[in-house]
Length: 419
Image (cartoon, rainbow, N blue to C red):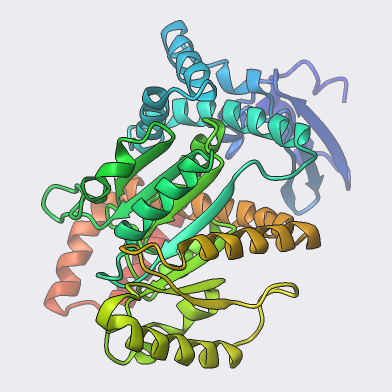
């Protein structure tokens, strides 16, 4: 051991690997700079890990991570200009400045590598502030997150405008994250939900943010979770996420919200067949829209059908049974009662502890979604893989190679590459 200590860290670890010890523990603090000779050491160091616990066994090197990050670790690599930029956004955000909130969401939506790093610094600051606010609120969530879904033409935007105006008149601050499908040509939003909520968009207690999906599945954007956190940091106590529409993987929004509401039109044909069963199972509240005029009778029929259908589904909560109601955004019928049921849901879930457990589970889902995205991006940009992709795609198109064999070849090239 005395002979190994004077050497640089990479030589020190390599020496330990050759040592006859059966087991050894070593802890690196955040101030320790690991050399590039240790596989995967640099990425962990760049994330600002407070300590990394290494266990050396006779058959190789295994890691156990003890991660304790501090805000200082995240800001060490920023220039003075970048630090001032992040501080300006953070200060304006927690003061409720709409311009700073809009700029912060734009920052987290950016795909530029450096801006993504700045976004993580900002998110860490907002997260710490958010936790402090929740602790002062006796550990209760500061905001109520509601996901809204439904087929095109269900009247989601019309409902949100009436519902949002009602909430702001009652003293709430409302944030609407309207997720639009993207144009294949420009990558921008197709529907432009903000233009269809003219009254609500002029309300100073409401903030509407339309975001294109850019091809993301699940009816949400890649950064919806981050946008929710930023809106809550800006003081908005009700967050509505309006999704693209009902699809096979639409229920991804349920992993981001406290309550999932499904809006259905009263005259859409065979409703029970037209809506995916998985979406109905995820719904905490089903609202039949446009229940006015000539559509009252079909709306009542659809309500009865869904009441019967929900009885056959497995319960997801011990304290809440999904409800089916009728509403009309034109006449306002049923919307106040709908809000009362939403508050009942929130109170019951908070009292039972299910809401807290649900949010903790969602944090894990969020983390793993980011891991999958990062791993896929790293795979696609790996030099060996990037060189082979056009050749393999051409072989798959001509039928010379099956997609499965092409995928296996890329994975082997990735594993054998020098990275």
